[in-house]
Image 1: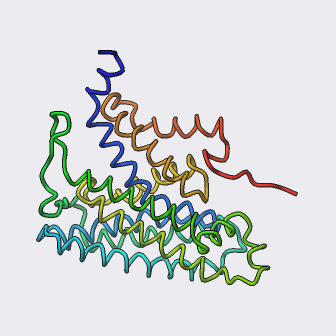
Image 2 (image 1 turned 120 degrees about the vertical axis):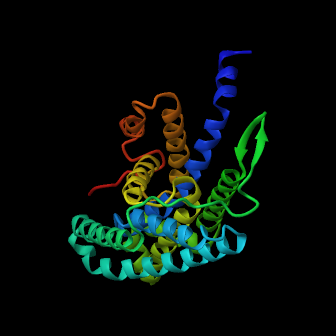
Image 3 (image 1 turned 60 degrees about the vertical axis):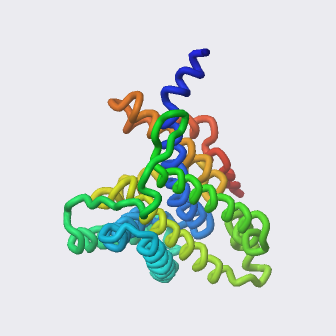
Length: 298
């Protein structure tokens, strides 16, 4: 047996954990990436949306833990996230001509207000979220037990990735979204009302952030500080993948998922710095991210 095979056998569960975490990061980051690519909006409230979803899971699912409660939690997350995205678009569009700093400060303020309200409403204790009934057990993977819920999380993340690929690459709506990312001014000259599409993208991205919070509840729990941690990690994913690229967000999420989980398991003392080291290394080679587009100047 080769050294590589031995290493893989010893770390298989950690690698699968990295896959699950990476796809959760993708679900969170893909909306953030597209919103920045289309609106040039750095939404610093994205992590707060995730935390809100985690609290939804803690309140709705924790007392019951049944399938129906999970369906209800996901439905609430979708509706809440979509409404939050529409509202965020409405308050940030008037600042579009004032540059990134004004929008970033506004969304940072919204994030701080949202975090404070969540702290007042749910307290400072970290809440645990159970997996739904039937998914709270484990299965054997090459003789090692592994939680069923994390396998479902992998499946859900892959489903989101496939849907995003189909919508963005195979539909007229997706072609319009990609065109806006490339050059919104030209799209507007064709008579297309980009405002409706922008509202829709931010609503969808915000909804995915809240849904990711619900899905991540059994893995990460719900508590103060989680919003800042996931936002920072999602920003790293977006920068690595390239702004405005859904495929880039997927690659970045999978990469950071492995770096984070393997780093924590094999080198816990330096694990917090590894994701930034990976980002720096990639940006040296690809300054615009793995699948990002270089901006052209006149």
